Image (cartoon, rainbow, N blue to C red; front, side, top):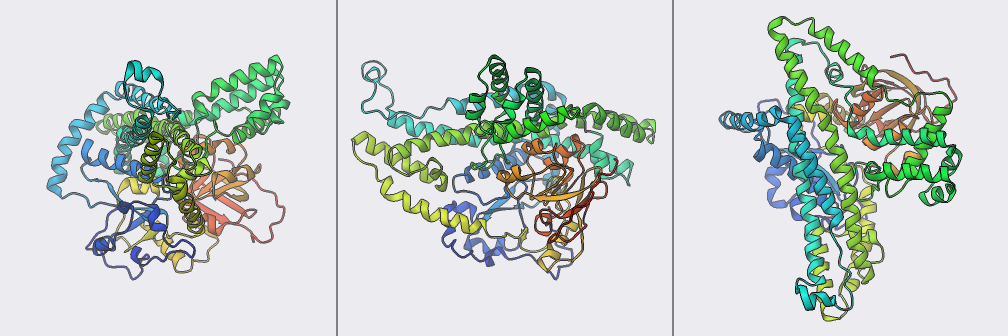
Length: 628
């Protein structure tokens, strides 16, 4: 995103970040976040002149104090990769701030032309090495990231027993359990910090290669739309679809073994294991256990919040999905994802455009397309490794530390720790170290419960607040490609936000990005949080602030998808295309303009959502899905 100082000033503006009021009941919310996350009064002159966009694509909810360790890490990883590691010529990182618990970002100004030229030389050398050796480097990256995941699981929380093991006294003479408590916590924070460098190592290069192909297509075919370009690199299997594939395979296996009824009658893992006690049941459970590691380390949400538990923690969603797939099998449906069909369509579209090029341009087009297809899987694969598999282990390891504090009376519930900042948890570690070492009682139980209780109240008040999509002056232009492709922020998006801020247009047509082709009509199901997904019914259209890749388990039930945020390359758009599901992303205010039960039409070709009836009195109407 870039602000053109020469552009005429807009008469309209977004709220000044320094003028945002604190919601009633949330007074003192600032103490939940570190100083570097806040709008500091000393920087008012500088920060109030910037445009700040809310990052609702990755962080749609109020962040818990401890969870900001992950949010900080994610922005740090992106920034250092752009700025210091690969030296992307036009792009630096992002400034990040929190207002009333919600995360906002502002792009740092692009370097001057001379600096960009110098950075371009560095980028060519560094990125060129990766592009030329992509497959081998990516294979090596997979080893490093799986090692990082294992390292989190291997961190031990010491027992803090009555006496140190006698072996330490007679043989090892190493650190005590108190020392290991602190070093283990530090190791956990270090792992959570370093994973984001791994996360971004290939990601921005993948986007850069795709942008190169997109730019080349726009040069040769000025009328081509972004969706057509994206379909030329679709039909490529990625890891994010593997968990859903495992559920489909388990549904088939249940039918083969004759245990489907017992599986469908189970809503929890305990119930499932008590229902499957014969040999066929044990065989199916063995297949389930094999699938769980690692594919059920799949968050119900984005993975960026500790409250978004994973399938491995709670089997209710995957069990419901397996039951849905069993029903589809019995109805004669083919559960195979349409990969071959997408590849045929992809190759047909590509061939049509190749025919329009002369021989001199063809080789460059093929080279750019080949690179885009080579790197594209990583744009999604990193998400499974980091946001889902790694963070499942990370959050659960934090819970292991919290359980130790519960044991020593610091707080009552393992989940209470997440109301503390990571630096405050370190203070609690020192408290516990000292008390355990001396044989006394920690101070924590007299200090933290009241703070946690107050922060719980603050969180609820912040959660009920409606944050604006942007803060500060209206940008003169928005031209940074990733801002457009990933977040879906364009001049038109900004205008829609301003219209809504001024009272709305009153139109029954919402406009966004054509995320995935096709047209569908159906009753809307508005889902604001992952724990509401079990309300989705067959034939409905999912409407959400943002969708997670793990929501593909409900894609077999819905006719289409609508998201408030996102561009042509967001996860919702990519996943919808691979499942041949019509989708419109980046509509801005779909969740506030559409009501559950309302009849809507999703046009994934035009990027529009039409409200077809009065949501207050929906009637039964026949809904049809238009042919693609």
